[in-house]
Amino acid sequence: MTARVLVLNCGSSSVKYRLFSGERTVASGLVEKIGEAGSEVTDHAAALRHVMSTLDLGQLTAVGHRVVHGGKRFSEPTLIDDDVIAAVRALTPLAPLHNPANLAGIEVARELLPGVPQVAIFDTAFHRTLPDFAATYAIDAAVAEEFGIHRYGFHGTSHAYVARRTGEVVGRPAADLNVITLHLGNGASACAVTGGRSVATSMGLSPLPGLVMGTRSGDIDPSIVFHLVRVAGMTLDEVDDLLNKRSGLLGLSGANDMREVIARCEAGDPAAMLAFEVYCQRIKSTVGAYYAQLGRVDAITFTAGVGENSAPVRAAALAGLGRLGITVDPAANDAAERGERIISPPGAEVAVCVIPTEEELEIATQSLACLDRG
Ligand code: AMP
Image (cartoon, rainbow, N blue to C red; front, side, top):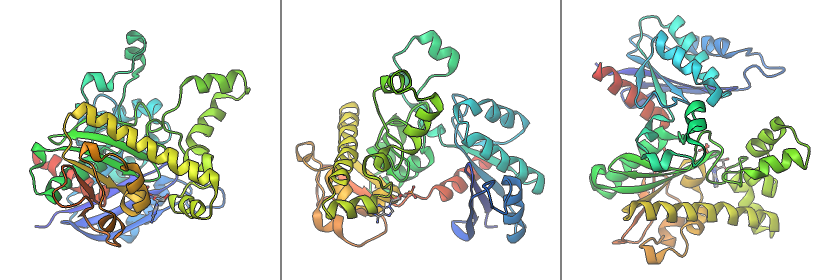
């Protein structure tokens, strides 16, 4: 019988859902503005009750939940029970906006679908294979241990999926490949994957560091925080808001959407041109760092909204890396194709790929794999 899996991705004010029958999507949708002023949907429970009332949820094999933070405990998809719920709740200080929303989804789904196995798929789990040197911040080790200060990394479901698909696209077993995956969406992160295992990633304790994002700064000198508090008189919450919501492309150019940034570049706007350059150079430095760590790179894969759609970003981020065997073929890069594809010239040492991410499908696949393992 074909497995039917409901995938739930509950954000701080949204619920994304997708119902799969095998690999086929039979229903999908998004409820937004949950709990916001003027919204009819007061909380996640109400949103989920509404969603579930519209779906045919008979014969459901599993519900797969995206859970953002799994801390050090969760390294694989996990069947949800009371103990897992308590553990996810205990991790809330590490993901104050996300884990409570994920838990709300889990609790309502358990109530409305009693008897259907519920599986948690953690954004951080794929990165539990990071070697210690890559996951360790060079601060007082006792303080780090006591407060869980550690590079956890995020977007794991997406990096895992596109790294695996890269093997298919280049026609080599993923087990033999060294891949750098670039998830460039609203949030953005890079990952070095060797033999299907994450060995470096650009996000950290939180999804704030690393690459420049739509509204997040990515890497900055941490003393900027002290400076803004001590000299500019900002509160910690104001700095938090600045770095997460008013920085990145938005902070530099006034637009958080890469399409708008590029349109402004074409119109000659210097702030947009600088934002584009900072964004692409950060990707390039990260590729260089991961190349050095991996020693050999077989493929570089772009994914998510910007990575899948923006030829100018792909070209600029990898420009000048010919000596490393990395080149982008302009015609292939600019082609109006949308599916999985290679954009490096034939025979290039490093295959540069574009692979649309399928996080929901990966959550469904991993949920079923978890049930099979028992
Ligand atoms: P995601 O988080 O993967 O949904 O990515 C969303 C982001 O992708 C948007 O904020 C846009 O900046 C970006 N995006 C979508 N389409 C394009 C495009 N054609 N060119 C450049 N950026 C795009």
